[in-house]
Image (cartoon, rainbow, N blue to C red; front, side, top):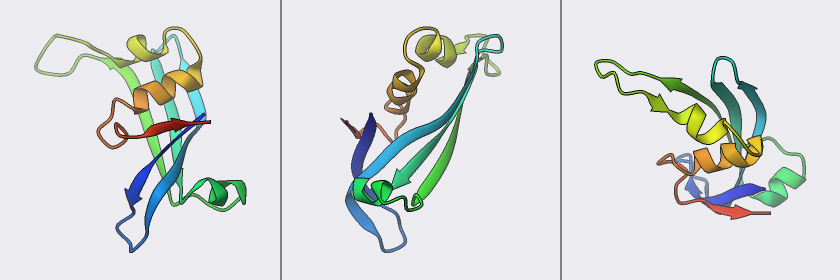
Length: 106
């Protein structure tokens, strides 16, 4: 599965249906961390043609206890403890402001 949304790349290129996919997922259950790359293509046809993505973003997720509070942020435990890792990464991505208005596509 992948995601799609309207994106202005701020370089004169605007697309109504950017194709966003998650790749290269790494999960470390002992350290409670997950890392993955998000590739954003102009559209699905661009991706299917084997062309390079317009943007690539690295996402890192872990269970942390930010200072000055002692209340932990359990992003890893909440999103990656069970289930399909790629689906979990997409679910987590939809919680971020940049991706919250994405639509899931097959």
